[in-house]
Amino acid sequence: MIKKSSIVYGFSLSITGFLIAALLNALIPITADVEITEYSVAGITVDINSTYRAVLIVLSAIFLVSGLISLKDHDKWKKYVKGAPIRFASGIALLVWDILGTKWQLLPQPFFPGPAGIVEAFLIEPQFVLENTLYSLRLYAAGFALGVVFGVGTGILVGWFPKVYYWVTPVLKVTGVIPAVAWMPFALTLLPTPFAAAVFLIVICVWFPVTSLTSQGIKSTPKVQFEAARTLGSNTLDLVFRVAVPHALPQIFTGISTANAFAFTTLVMAEMMGQPGGLGYYINLSKVWSAYYKVFAAIVVMAVLFSFITAILERVEKYALRWQKGLVR
Amino acid sequence: MAEQIEKEDYILKIKNLRRIYKDDDGADVEALEDVSLNVKRGEFISIIGASGCGKTTLLRSIAGLDKPDSGSIVMDDHKITKPDPERGYVFQQGGLFNWLTVEQNIAYGLKTRKIYKEKKSEVPKYIELVGLNGFEDSYPYQISGGMAQRVAIARTLINDPKMLLLDEPMGALDSFTRADIQDKLLELHKFNGITMVLVTHDIDEAIYLSDRIVIMTPRPGKISNIIEVNIPHPRQRGEAEFLAMRRKLLQEFDLATAHPEPEYNI
Ligand SMILES: Nc1ncnc2c1ncn2[C@@H]1O[C@H](COP(=O)(O)OP(=O)(O)OP(=O)(O)O)[C@@H](O)[C@H]1O
Ligand SMILES: [Mg+2]
Image (cartoon, rainbow over all chains, first blue to last red; front, top):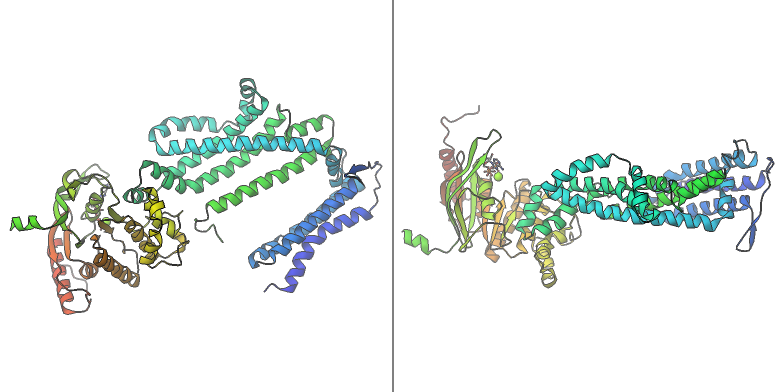
């Protein structure tokens, strides 16, 4: 079913880029004048280069396995093959960056360390990086979850009751355009802990888009659907929760994914403005010591973490909206 | 004579119904003017008439979805003021819940009336009844228009209604699917004894299905005539009695619409 040439093409491009990067990292000597520190991880002595190579090999192993899994399904394989050139190019880009940043150090230092240099942050203080990552994650989870709950709740009220719509919409319009972090000084003084203050800001920034899209979705429910439900025996509560809310789900999810992006921004900014932890805090702290490789390390963690969260949300959305035409391939 | 009519078992008594809408300019539109109609228990009644003569308004009033300005509708001694599952309503289209599967759409009435647990086993029966086995887990966007209307019929039937109100339920369907659903309706009418009130544009459909045909005229909307169809079932669309009835209805129509001058197309 799947052609042999396609298999060779898909796998070789997906894997070799990273393997070449790893190989050349081992072969090309470091000509710049830097000392390479050795660390002990779980009893094994490693340095930044061997760890970096391990990361590259793990990456190619991940793409090998995901390729093997996608071989079972024709469409999935097509998607995998489509991504193959990008994977190869990423490997080569890492290679070039490695040479310019670490091997020859042609990039201005210490602002632009090589990829292996960034790895050093995880070797020096893995515990600290993890703690800050978890702090960010907790902050995000608390703020985002509360924001969505409040947003959907308010959205239902605004969408259902014309009176609420009349009085709340202007408030939403005005507060909605204010970036949430502008409330930081108030939040910090009025709320008991910095954590609570940051949660409050994330709630605010999530609340606005979720509320307005939920209310739009509720309001746009066709009359015939309510009438059908009434002739089938629904009371008002069921008209809201069995008809209007499910009908509004697509819009609710649009609101949620917009809010998600806002939440990341607010999260990092709040952390940079007075939190005792978090990736934003870690960036600030590292900047003071001119440890730019740590700044990059935090950015890499953010990229991975936020992509992961976004991917999960997309999965949830796809499942919840599986009834929508055109959403399923 | 009048006494005799009173003795009939009427499920529905509509008396002096009047409904006035305001159009965009604020002028009155008399959608229904003094409509009176009695529907016998277990009867199949069709309402036909030109566009805008108030068929939908009348049907919605019976359903309790629309409030008349004056007059009354009484079903089994209860004045109709709001919708009730004992009167099922099948919309022309768009009534299904897109987020529910075929099975969930059919089970909706049980769930919203909080009797799903006890009556769960009913659901497959109604799926079977409308011939949708194998499509239980399909979503509305995945099924054809004819199947969607069968789902719409099944989900009203699961509430065990005394009466089914159908507003051009086959208007958007091709003729094969129409014939299919028409037979399904006849079957339901025959075996379950449900009173049917059908709004249609199609004279043949009305003759094929009904015991009586109510003819309405527009501006103001009112009943111009009621015609009994005494052809035994199964009716054949080609046979003489059918064609005679057709001719009679068409004649009625010409009278009902009362063209000042006949129009000829060359
Ligand atoms: N919600 C409304 N607001 C204003 N006017 C209305 C409304 N509903 C119906 N009308 C008017 O009342 C009259 C009767 O409408 P109705 O929908 O009952 O006609 P109908 O016989 O069902 O027509 P059709 O065959 O086109 O469906 C029409 O003139 C229509 O314009
Ligand atoms: Mg109509």
